[in-house]
Image (cartoon, rainbow, N blue to C red; front, side, top):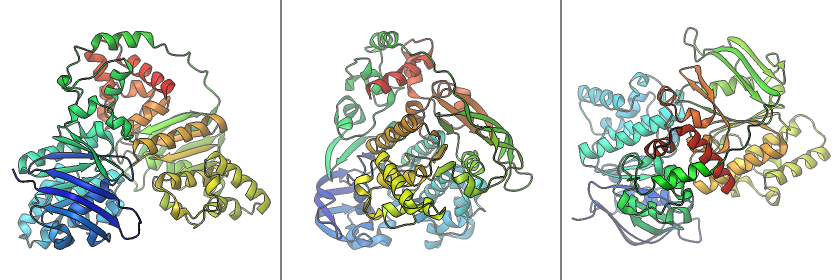
Length: 566
């Protein structure tokens, strides 16, 4: 069979760089295949995608060596418009993909360009909107939507058109776990129904493997370092060596001393033959002992009977009651649009609640201004570029102190101290533009920490980051939590983060507080997981299939063991 995508000795160097981003790529993808491309940040995965859909070198200028053919077409010659008839792309940055004033207009854009008859256009838009669960949003502006809703609209805009290749650049980055499962299921259905070729670029390996993929291609430093079936790759050390997080059940099996073989089909927890491993898993479970539980500290933040609605009669949050202890590291989880970010905005004073109280250190802060609350409660947004307003690192971190009239001598002392805590002191005189995404994230955290807040709220602290950068940021947050005693609240869709780094999770679903418990118990409760669009951890299934009577105890021991070995 002839490849539909074929790279031969392909090298690509961006015009602004001295070294190539892609080097000597030899890769063939065949019609109807479903391929997952993984690799650390900066390895060249997105550049590979840009070459396939024509963005490079049409929009991202650069030098090309070797050949690339996509359905017998050279993307460099066909350009973006020509390639859009062959390759449908869902970008990682959904905001950069919207064109219409409403969701319906945006989905219909490709059909309008193809002069599809209006009645058929309406039918196709409604059908695809139903599939990705945005039917109720068709009249909304894309800018009104949550991150996960935007992702689904982008997927609908690509799926509404008949293209040969569907290319997804981190389709799960902003989706809650259950919606992510549905997205992967949806991609799989479309691939089978249309016999389309599917290429997925994603960090969340375990989530993509929820549905079968034909091959996993590992990219490292611009080269193809591995290309094989999921069963083969999960048995080796390539993923670990390249800094890619393997599925949690695979990690647990390795902790138990199991030697995993391709013959047991380890690509998914439902398909793996566990008979050779059960005894070792049960023995390991018995040997791990949990430490004694800590005595709860004083309350840092308390929320009492909180109600809020943006539009009268349409409540977003109802009767929220919760306490956060001093020095705690807490996860706030739930489906897209559940009200998690709204809760953080109310705590920070961006909106006033319709009813209820927010208390900080046992004092009602309802009368404090945003500025006054900002000195005690810091909010770090998901995208650091939305927070940074100064070109130089030192000036960015100093900004909050300067606008409050702090003497320059004290500003310098506090900024230097904070930069040292954040590991940014060597870069104090650097421009922000010279930093990586993860370093920029640290700058935004430093600009909050310098104010000596009591509480730090982080919105999706690890979204779109590879395992190495994820671990760096989370270990850094854990360090400031333990050494500085700062209370940290994290709004997240990342169930791994919730399991590995927090001891308590607050679950919000449909505007109500659904659960307040340990991550292990939350992620082994099928009812809670279903209601809040979470995903039951694969460790639960591993425990059940290995005959362990208390799956949540197995999960808790795994978390404790992981923290020790890390």
